[in-house]
Image (cartoon, rainbow, N blue to C red; front, side, top):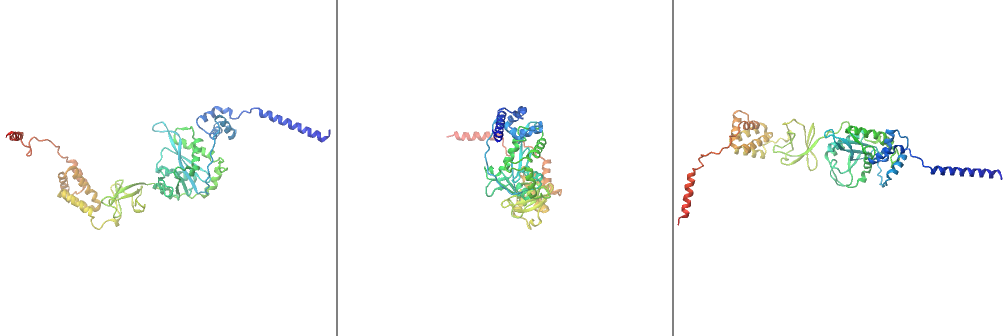
Length: 464
């Protein structure tokens, strides 16, 4: 046998021995590193937690040194694997778009009822980097919805150009694919930050699939099966998880770390405004006969020609704005006044008494001479601002009768206090005497006369 043949035979025998060794090793069952934590993992599965959250809990609470794939295989053996459906990915530019939505939050103990209540989970997810901000709240309203956006913008350190949202009432009043009606306060808040709202098509959540996935990720991983004593504890837990795990993860679609992608996107976000948005209240008001609308017991003048018509009113702690209900144009803007004050633009004061006010004064004169004279005094002193007081005097006539109000107005004129409040207090301090049934009255005849009349009529009827 030659030297080359001996070397080849020896190499073949070594390969055969290695294959046998590998085969025997493959036949041996290697115990998983997760086996020691089987009870804890089983409990997490029963509470609905996914493989990622279980692995993170093992690392944080038990110092687990194994990898995520090891835990994933172990969990898959315990409950089986799930099939994921593929969806198209919408590609956006840096700092261009964010998606927002609500979801169910964790159970938190209510400080009033001392029972656990379900919170609401707000999520804002950037379209390019998938950086998400998760915030918890007890209940939702238009103001709460706007404040959550502002808090998310502050946490991101900037704002995007477009916000994609669902057609929930806090953001969209009238869903429409081409011309949706955005909630006025939400629209103005976004305009303050230079953002445009883009509602998704009704019953098409795929348009905002990134935030839908973000909400599901938070629900299944950090808060699934968790209960907290206060909402602050729940938010702190969510923030720690977001910084420790969500931002450092490799995203399944982009195949890059979320924090690294957000570091690239952040310079492309628009700067925050110097002042936060000033929230206001809004409602509809009918312009009164004096040309004013009432807001928190104060009165603000509307332009001429709007008496009896309805306006849209917005007010905050400093300003009151009157808007056209059809086109939203600003009609008048006034400073906020204390209760009982009246604010009218000097250009809106009429040069002569309106016809409606003259008719009102005629009604007062027909009710009684003192009533008419007092109403004339009110109008002479306060002009159109006294129309409401004149109406108040006429309402007292309906309630107490013309005779008693005439006496009250006569006393007010004698004391030189021609004011509605004096008349009202006079009537309260001089109540009308109680009504009693009298036995004798000029209009009531004696019963004997009625008896004789009945007898006479009966005799006449019976006679032939």
